[in-house]
Length: 125
Image (cartoon, rainbow, N blue to C red; front, side, top):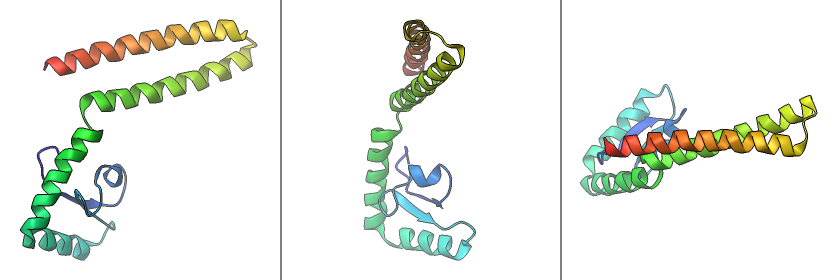
């Protein structure tokens, strides 16, 4: 999709979240080669649809799947996991809320520094 190619894929796993059905390509049921063939023929037979999906694919990639957006999403997810883990650990170890927050702050700082460094590196490539 990043190159403007409409994608036809099975409606499973990460594909179903990447492809916007009927906008950037088609999602088909898994293990149905006839349906896959129909969608391929349909897309290749309709140049207007193909061109529209090309434009939509590039827009979708730039909206959701740039390196910085993916890194932000991973950072957010890791932060949530760390917070949940820190709260659970604090409850189990009977650590004071202040101590727990101090440790969480240090973890978030280190994680943020790691992502910032990696993001700068990936943007320089």
